[in-house]
Structures are given as structure tokens and as C-alpha cells.
Length: 568
Image: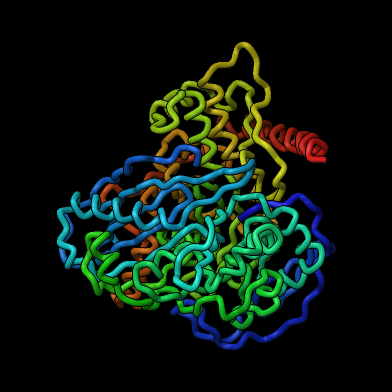
């Protein structure tokens, strides 16, 4: 997700909101009800008010992760419907990662800045990964006590009366709905923000549906049900329709004050509330594994399936973020900095979701292309699109000094989210000369993704977040070079926890659902025998990176005008 698209228009002023009480509603299982205070930003005036509210390179083979130890006793599985691939993680009852397997599926880009997938490709890919994991662990399927599913945010799946997908699923970074998102923002932006805690941009399911209403009305006419991608997979596994509060918020169709679907937001999308699934607590039981998908996965029919959540919340949860002040930096397909707080610090430039541990909300400052940019550059420069050698790429980048000998890279391959929310921004290498080589380009890509994160961080810092207890997660956390660059660019120590990811978070939620832990707050961070690595910032690079970041921002401002004129 998950999770967010972009827009280029200037947002209108935010209307002041009055304080209103939140009735008890179906938030995560640790919720005690009552009123949660959420901090609201009136962007036009800068005032803060309080209100109450409750890849280009698709892997053809899996990437096996190390087994931490021989599994004993019961285990659980976490399934993740990721942006470019599906992932299955096995955990023991202590929350220890036993192994992870990944299998890719294709993404179609029929037009520039479009991205969509066939939902029917997700289960077969996850089945291949699951069977490989079972074989590698020499696992008796009868020992699998339960499973849960997570996915990228905002990806809606439209189903017909027979429960079959009506059309390809639009992904979160797809930009086709810029016009529709801009129109919603201009005519109802304040109202949408007040109801859903998030500002309408092309990333949200609401905007995707508005685009379909105009350009593909036949699909909406055939639609009987709308599910988010994780909920569609759970539906295929159990035959039951359900979602969780965070996924519902990611559709931008939920009234966060009541925990119920909003008739007003559904009307903007061209749907009725009756077409949406029940909202159930995170880690609640959904159903049991049906015989046909059980056979496909190599599991036992009747295995309990529990409600997961969105990838960003599951990933942050798996990293052990349990209290305010702790945060996660994500180096995955998209980048992001995630922090939790109570009250939630909502802002039009941030993404806000309910967190598995009430009363916390997760605030996310997300970038559009992070590991995706690295994969694109590595594939392009090595000439191997199907299986780029990332270890060789990292080793090459390490031979260039901090600052990449003056080369800057802006990773705006699909526009950019926080802090610009501009779908027309494009990637660029700046400062190239005859004296530069592939090593400088390689390092500049890593540094560019780190600068994008530092840029996004500024919005969180404006809302009072500070970098402390930072965990580095996602595939990029495996790279010593990349992790070190992030630590130096942000000038803070980071603890790399590469196996703390969304599939592992889903597994932890399955353990919560089974009653192994006394609620989400009692669940540990996922564990491995290898432990985590701590990367300290290089004090000798601080001034250099401060100067490079200032140039990065200056170039961004100048090129943004060029792209805006080119767009007309």
C-alpha cells in the first residue's frame, strides 16, 4: 500500500471543523471505545484544531529467505498481495520468522502512468510461493494453525454477481484519475477530508471509481460487490466478504467517526453502501479455508483465516512499533516514513490509517517509487530486466563517494507523493559529465531515494514527529550500502530489520487472532536468529549531504515548472 497517488492542483483551504464525539465502533481488538482525539490541520491558515473521531522487474522465481531454525509446534502463515509480487511468510508461535517465499505476477501499463493487474493472477502466484515454503520447511500442513492476509492499500476489486472480477484492478500508483481526484478535491475536498481523514488524490479507491464512472460505466453497472485486494484474496480462500478499518479507510469510503461506510463518499464514487463488505476488527476471524483453495495452497481445509490489514500498518506492526515516538522507514516498492500517535496527526499531505493497537493511528509520509526506482535503474544499466544483479549493483554504488561526485537523481518515475503530490513530476539525473561513470549513477539512485524520504519527512516533523527508535524495513533494508546512505542522509541511526515486513505482520495478526498473545499490544516484533543491524550516520558526510539535499530541492522546484508547462 500500500499506500497513495498524486495530484498537481493546489488544494483549497480546509474548512474549520467542530468537535464531535465518536461513538463506540469496530476499531482494532484492543480498542476500549470512548473518544479519540485527532489533530486536524487547517492548511489555509496554518492553524491546528482538534476534532474527535474514532515494478518494472517482475521476479519469475521466488526469492527464498533464510530459515531461522527448525520449526517446532504450531505455525501460522502471513500472505501479502504486494505491488509486484505475492509473499508468504511462516512464523512460529513466538513470532519467529521461519521462512519467506515470493512469486511475481505481471503489471500492465497500457498507457503512461497507468498500472493495473488481473486479480485472478494473485492466488496462483501465492499458491506457488506457499507450496515452495512448505517444501523447504518440510512442513506438515496440519501444523498450520491459521493465516491472515495483507496487501497494498487502495487497490479495489470489482466483482460481478458470480463473484468474478469485472475488470483489471487499478493499482495505488496509477495516475489516470488525476482529473477526477482534482474535481473531487475542488468541489468536496474539505468534506471528504472531514469524513475520511485523508485528502482525495489519484491513489485512493474513491478516485479510481470516479474515473470508472466517467470512462468505464459498464464495469460499474456490472459490479455487485467491491473488495480491497487483501479482502478479495480472503474471499477466494473462505467465500466470506469482510474488510478491516485500515483497508476501509484506504478506500476513502469510510466515515472514521462512526466506523461505518459513508453514504456521501459512496455517492461520489457511484456505489451504494450495500455493495461494500462488513468492517470487522483487525485479527478477527473471517472464516475457514475452503477445500479448493486449500488444495491449491497445499494446506488443510478448515484452517482458520483471520482479518489482516494494509501493508504499511502490518509492516510497522511487525517491526515492533508499539508506542508513540517509534517509527519505521520503508525501503520497498514505495518508500515511506511511518509513525504512530494518539491523537492522530492528520494532514492533507499525509496518509492516516487506524493502527492495530488502539487508540493509535498511523501517519505515513510516502514516496511513490523507492525500490522500484532502484530496480528500474539496475535493470536499465545492466541490461538484465528479468533478473538484475542487485548485489553487483550495490557493490558498484559503493565505489562512488558520498555525493556521487555531484550527480543528483530525482526518483519521480510515477510522479511523486509526499510532500509534492504532483503526478506530472518525472525522474531525472542532473549534473552528468564525461567524467562520470556507472558507479556514480548507481550511488545517485540510492541517494535520490534517501533525499525523497528526507523531503517527505519534513511534513511529519511539522506535525511534531521526531526520528527516534527508527526501524528500517522492506527489501532495501537488506542492502548495507543503501541502509548506510539512508542513515547518513537523515542523520540518524537506523536499525535494519529486513524480515519485518507486511507478510510477517499478517502472521503476527494470525497469532493474535488465535489468542496466542493477549491482544496486539502484547505481540512481539518479528524475530530472526540473525538479529538486526544498526547503521550509524557518517559524521563526515553530514555537511556534504545537507548541501546535496538543498540542491536536490532547488532542482525539483525548477523542473516542476518545466513539467507543468509541458503538461499544458
